[in-house]
Image 1 (cartoon, one colour):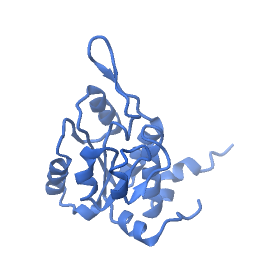
Image 2 (spheres, rainbow, N blue to C red):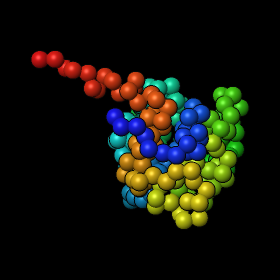
Image 3 (cartoon, rainbow, N blue to C red):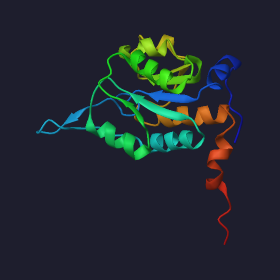
Image 4 (cartoon, rainbow, N blue to C red):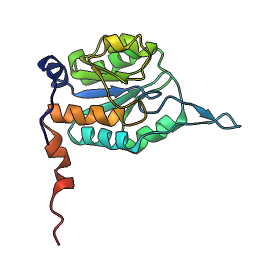
Length: 184
């Protein structure tokens, strides 16, 4: 695979990341909320984002979700991906992150966060690597260290996972089994 073409300043922000936190709505989904007549809702998650998260976990990079809304679909998605740290209804995402820092002993520099709206801004301004999607609210884009090419819910999470693994030199290690010769 070709080397990652990013500047050294961005590389220096990605290299220390040991935990990647994702917002949900507008990042791992396209941001739409679809309600059933009974009040339950549907969220559509990108399968490739999920595989990217599994690759991060395989490389020893922990993943967490912090979202301002509560939805049982998020619980199910997190469970399916083996994500243990899930904070829903979190209107103060810095507080949730501080809890993670206290539990893990990680530093802010070792945290990446991907968001898309004003509620995400305090955490984007605090972490070592701040990522937003291109369809994020315009007010948060200037605070990002990286803006994905893909939109939220359409592969943006996977783009971040792949970039993180490639910059940290872990891509080949976690994907080798897919490239092995299957034989006759």
